Length: 211
Image 1 (cartoon, one colour):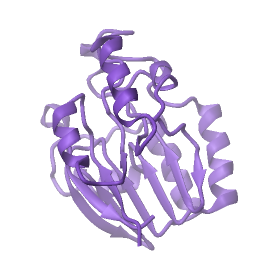
Image 2: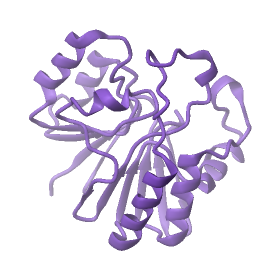
Image 3: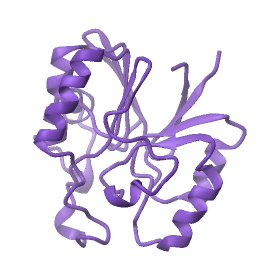
Image 4: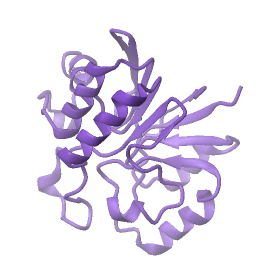
């Protein structure tokens, strides 16, 4: 059995990330890798040189430059389906008002409505067994974090209805996969909702799974 290490938000912590993947053949980091966050081309070249042609990959988060991700050899494009696993990145930044457009915030941090509708159609057609996303469906966010009293950014306990969360919710209502792994919410927590086991991974937390 070949296991894949799933890793929570990295936020540019390159040395810590290398420790997490040390000795592991395959891994997928679930967004907020830190691509484009002002680290300069050298940092991105080093990422490409180190993991670009290996089994270590990532999806994009809201704190990754969508255009720069396209230059990264280890990036998994949004909507990719491999066997019975589907990958979707992106999310809404609750702290966007405090960030600088083009520097540490990007208008395309979330997929567009049109792109999300297309991915919904792909999701319904393929009915994946496993979902790997940066964000999660609205219902999962509510039950796992808001209702449970786990605070988010700025100690907020408010559930924000976002384009990404609502699109993922519609997918969940159309088909319930066996497992749904995600990051973004910075809490490591597992919960079964209906027929799906949801697993959130906090910053650089990880789990080894059979995909």
